[in-house]
Length: 120
Image 1 (tube, rainbow, N blue to C red):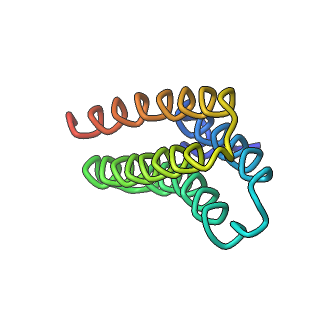
Image 2: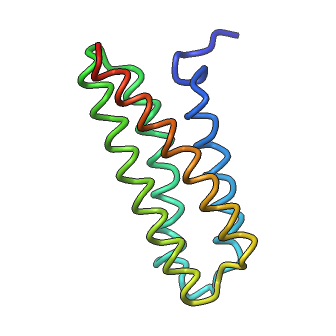
């Protein structure tokens, strides 16, 4: 089976791990948050992976870098939401540590990829 370029990126695969993690975390949130923080967090996580995929299909290096930058913005949005969920004690300490660690991993790789594109 043919793999598209984004499927070969470590950062995209790490972002997929993050999506699954976020969905598992938000599954434990109160039902009243279905259209609030649950929806926002799930969408932000998916947005990170989606922007990486979309950016990889762009022609110019600057365009590719721009999408990595957008993905980074969604990642920071997600981190903010994770922190807020922690304020409400909807996230366990273990989930927070794992979530932040995965966010950091993706952030570092996104920054490196964006810089690599911009140096071309």
